[in-house]
Length: 114
Image: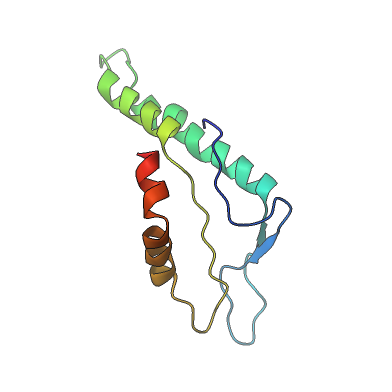
């Protein structure tokens, strides 16, 4: 939520993503990933930490609440990054290897963020 961004695509790039492609059927739930949509998703995601999940630990008439849990969730919302990873090689793609390679290639940057 602090606004830091790291990206390997241009600002106006758009990526078509599909969830479910089956022989002889239409694509099920296609969507487009772009920067504006991602920023909306990011806000919704991190809002869930401090509003939706933290609400479980807030004080009620029957419970004093768990301030440490609320504080933990709020800190995570402020310190985590939401990541969108797409591997469009449907035949030979290896997302697991892609992520491991990215981590290895960017280990200095990742360490600097900790």
